[in-house]
Image (cartoon, rainbow, N blue to C red; front, side, top):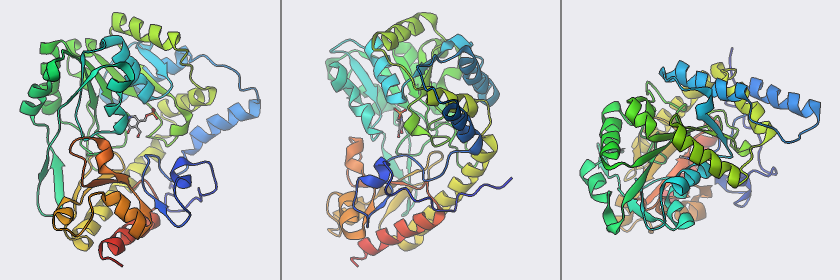
Length: 396
Ligand SMILES: Cc1ncc(COP(=O)(O)O)c(C=O)c1O
């Protein structure tokens, strides 16, 4: 079966956040949703709900928990009981709840910036201390960057600012740097968390958007001890491009931890939408997996096109080679240092190039001078976006 990712589906004039935020002449390449239709079996599952016509309150069913658990086993050989799967209204809600049940005001939550900006706000929501273990970029050559965890920085961040660290909020694969962490890296992180009795909350929302030969390893699969100390967050939302349905899952094999998490979900009345359950049931059952294979090939080709373009057409700009996600992280620091670009590259590209990226500074320490580009879009729009960036940098 072939799948069409090339046709441009007009989204302007819809309620799309991505397409409404900027004026009509701006090409949006910012917020993390893709410009593709969700796979047909998922749309059909949603259509069946609509045809029924009564969209009342829904319980996440045992079948839904079971299908999520079964996918963990088929993808990773990870055996979890269906009751370990807790339905949540999105992953941002999920990691805020994880922090609220495990970290007391004045205690520490550790994050690895530059990182998806809601990670940087959890401490403010709950009166916690944010501990930053910044991950430094390494220039592989004049065009390419790779982010590698510096464990001495991580160790210094633990108990920094006079606060006991109670939770490590891991982003794997990592937004915006595109890293899918290796087993060695995950083992080194997990060993530290076990030693220091730090809960791991692992946001794995991008785990099925793997590029090239990349493999994903859920950190909870490293050992029973790590599993018992980990809340893993997954969703069909990014993978199958249904993020507006706000449905995700917290996988919590440890029964005591799960009880506290569920109590909080119920206390806050965090219900999940009927349509989200229907889409997730279809997605986790594997109904969209042919589409997903084709999508990964398409995104991998888009990534490679982007890397070639940066190398040949954007002198002075470096880029990560994402292992997962459809997000590229562009480094404009050399151009800024040479006085050829102002401090905020995304703002400059918006004004001069009429193309909207996310400003790197919004991803916290280590983000200034960067911009994040979403390449989950038909190739023709990616080409247009990159051409606009080139024109803007050439001052035309
Ligand atoms: C790492 C990460 N976590 C969570 C989210 C959003 O999750 P949700 O919309 O389910 O709250 C995103 C969206 O870009 C993300 O990149």
